[in-house]
Length: 244
Length: 244
Image (cartoon, rainbow over all chains, first blue to last red; front, side, top):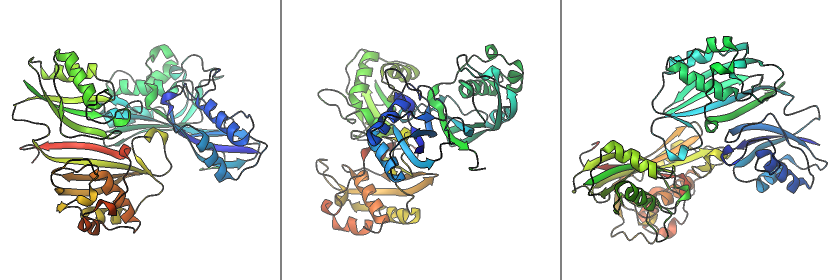
């Protein structure tokens, strides 16, 4: 029996998604909850890793269990065993063809900023910007990301990707009062790609960079800055056949 | 030299505003920072208490110090000594006629709710509602609070107020996507008044209460529920002559 679950988490207190020998990851917490609910040890496979401090609004994962439970009980049962920083939003029964990582067709990340005085209730949840940026300039720069490009400039070492070519379907800024949101949708993301992109977009807004030129360089040395993890949210993952 | 400071804090880790023998309050944290910056022990007087877990976007306080520092250094210096959960947003030099508590003319509280699946990044910051409430019904009920009334129904024991008559200048609901905001402005608030009101407004929305009738009763036994502290924000405090 294969289950697909959609998860939201506050990444602040975790060492990231990926299981670690001493625990402390979101994956460890979910695997522990699966064990407590089903009485079976099962690997929980996520759509991809998120780094320490990165949040998720709609991470997707799958796991296999011999026992069959009503889906409502899977959601409620896992939430009963999970810390409040991780919530299962929904559970589905899927065929074993479904793989949360390999079947993912596109993912959207959101990067959340707040322009103005730092408000403590937003600590670890946004990047604080001292003033409201020029939204038109930001959005124009973001649009240059759209398309199939070699994003080597925006890839940190250690990700182990075979190719740095990715297709960005959409990249845009939205403003809601003092909140500035950057959304980027692609068929996949390189290691630290969104955080490197955000750092360059903010630099470009101040006239210190141009996204098209940076893509052309294919060299991380041209884009060394990394926006902090706390502003980054895995927004959603889309699989074949759905929402298309 | 009297300083007026405007503060924002995440109330989650504090036992409230009010100084406690063993520390752990916001007031204790601010007094500690004042001592470190000015080298003097000084009482920091807030516009009013906030309970454990209640947040502030614009709490106001005053304190006296013999030493005179540039206002920019007061803000920056206090922030350097304060934990990140408390931020000084601004500092002013005021006359000794100004008293953060006694001179306050009106205060606004916000109660923040989120309709939908609990998102962990909002834990301790909102009241989660299972579904979107009827905004028109909520707002109609809220409007019944406006005016000068005896709010005894909405007063918890232990506040020590001389009278339970207060003037509510405005009370309204706003919706921003999944966020539901309740704003209430008055010349003063009774102990737990906003949290008791919010619990009754949500009950009224489901047809189980009426605010006008509850005011009429003048009896807390008719309104025993208390909305959780984590949704409550002291929004701002207005003093004579300002913003009027």
